[in-house]
Image (cartoon, rainbow, N blue to C red; front, side, top):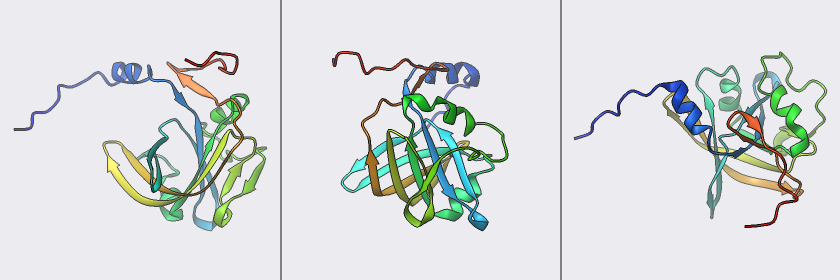
Length: 168
């Protein structure tokens, strides 16, 4: 028999989940009328190396959801430590999140942010509605990385760099 979990205080649960440090990405694509879309996401993860598959998720109420569904492709832009401003810009309600952002064109003309630690270009292979989010799974078609210091986030703040730390 399956029993339902007790109700949680969603704010308190969010605080607990924020204890897990993550990298910060901006996921980009193109929607109807070739309109560029981009959102800040720290839900990115590696699913499989053989074949190479990654995942990320987006809220069901996001105004960008339809564009990601239409495109069938996305780019994971792993932000570098000096790109905190892009994390803020792509999580804002501004009309043009790409204003003043240098971009290149990736596969099929998708926007790729310049200066990122890594860029992973994907074809959507599955989309699952789970709770209040959509989980996107993508087959990695192309990637590149610079090995620069990534932007990290934990407990509501950006973390200091780790480049001068000794490996564990």
